[in-house]
Image 1 (cartoon, rainbow, N blue to C red):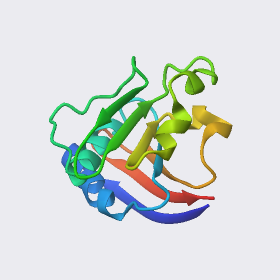
Image 2 (image 1 turned 90 degrees about the vertical axis):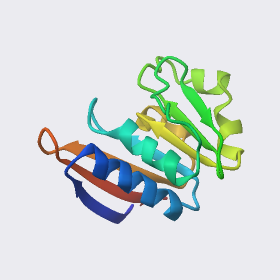
Image 3 (image 1 turned 60 degrees about the vertical axis):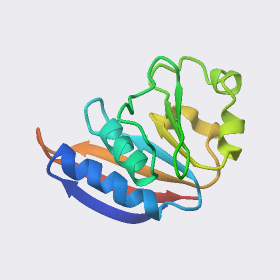
Image 4 (image 1 turned 180 degrees about the vertical axis):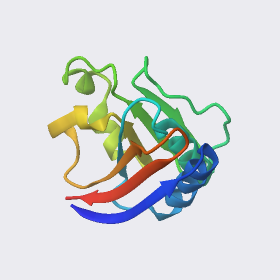
Length: 143
């Protein structure tokens, strides 16, 4: 693993802006795994990624009950949330491998649950709550 970036966000607005900025920087690999406790800012970050990719929607929500939401824009965004994944075989049922081959950015909240299903290379973006408003966000390249 190599650390690419470490930043402290002081607000949702800053986390959103970071996601928007990073959307232009994430090229290959096209998979980003988001890790962090509930309320750490992962979905806010994804909203920023969507803006940065030119997605025309204001309703970027965590796909907790569907596993994946697709957003289409200048570049497509496939937003997974594996929080409720109970069995790794469910990834095969939802077409996980097909999504990894699609043109666009695959973002996976709670992606550590995918284990061996993750590609050899991906970005790991970790969110740590420092205080009520502050988040430490680390971006690393894995593989």
